[in-house]
Length: 230
Ligand SMILES: [Zn+2]
Image (cartoon, rainbow, N blue to C red):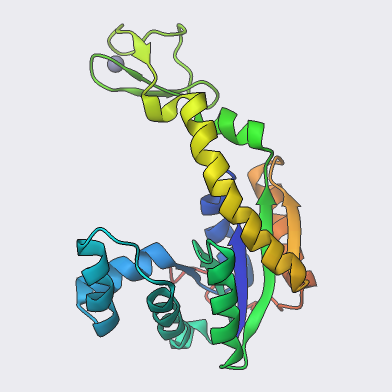
């Protein structure tokens, strides 16, 4: 089984690219956030264990996350490979994943970074404005109001929440990019890191990501569900 890791800063478009890559390669996306929610909901032993930490407001330990992942990777639809989204988030997690996969004669065959410069990430994430009257959402770039600063629907003033302001976003991003750097360093070290320019149009990025994975040795599964089973 081949494991593909999709990496990118928040706002880089990783969430958009994951299902497109799944379609092209014919293998599923495994998102750790979804795995946790399902395990907790179904009350599986690992789910109950994870829940003890979540209820106490603590981070779920890496070994529980890794065990949950291995359980998922053992299911039939993962036999040809998986795309991991949302894990690993730190260098320590990347190492733990490598070790766990090695025990099963598996490995990360490609870690693809959807690369977007920091200033562009800030621009993408800080463009959100909402109206005072009803919270109608706007975005400077993708859905601007007809008159700047005024809601199209009710004429009320538009404002930015603290969370959406450039300085807040820059500070949060700096923290997240620090741990992403650790993960990149890890995969650069093992020789499986590939960079893709995330500034190009979505479908061009999708092609480049799929090409990078195929170049790393994962053969696309043509004639499979093509991702339609999602
Ligand atoms: Zn409004």
